[in-house]
Image 1 (cartoon, chains in turn blue, green):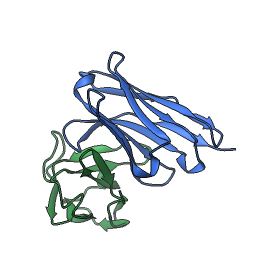
Image 2 (cartoon, rainbow over the protein chains, first blue to last red; image 1 turned 90 degrees about the vertical axis):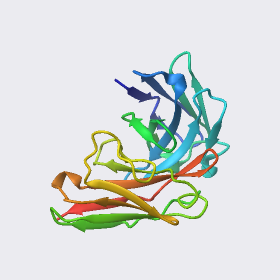
Image 3 (tube, rainbow over the protein chains, first blue to last red; image 1 turned 30 degrees about the vertical axis):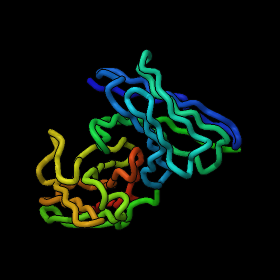
Image 4 (cartoon, each protein chain N blue to C red; image 1 turned 45 degrees about the vertical axis):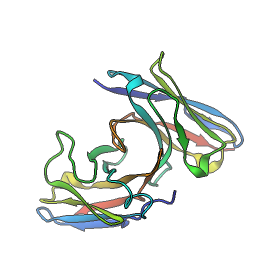
Length: 118
Length: 110
């Protein structure tokens, strides 16, 4: 069955960097666009970024452009999110999710927690 | 990419119906029939419950339905059950390759 497993989260100081990974299995990875979505503690869901199945099209939330970069390696069935210049407000659980159509986040990982703290 | 507007909370008694609105603009909800809805229980990942405004994925009870009028989409849950108590989020395409979530609504089953 479809499985998404995020990793790479942890405690990081402000100004630091992290690369999150999302390992996928159970489906043809290169066929689907994938999104990163985050959720700050006690807050709602926020769309972070998306990438097309072939990796040629990407986009990021306007407020995160310049610091966040989505990418994928279809040979490894893995999605990435590079986060630079981390801020306190980036503290959140980061989820990856498959887009099964258009705006259809059909399957989700369990999330990985990023905690930005000095 | 401002968040879509949802009521912070709604409530209803078992067996009743509730509706959750999701108001956007002519650039997102009003522009596309690509609104989906998600249910999230505490500590869990979101669950996909409605797509393309009105369609239900397999396995989602027909108590859940969606609609749209202009810039506002709605999720209606009929025959409320205790397990429906959760947070609900709308999600809409907002550009060629851009998306936005609603702020979320907490549903309380009284």
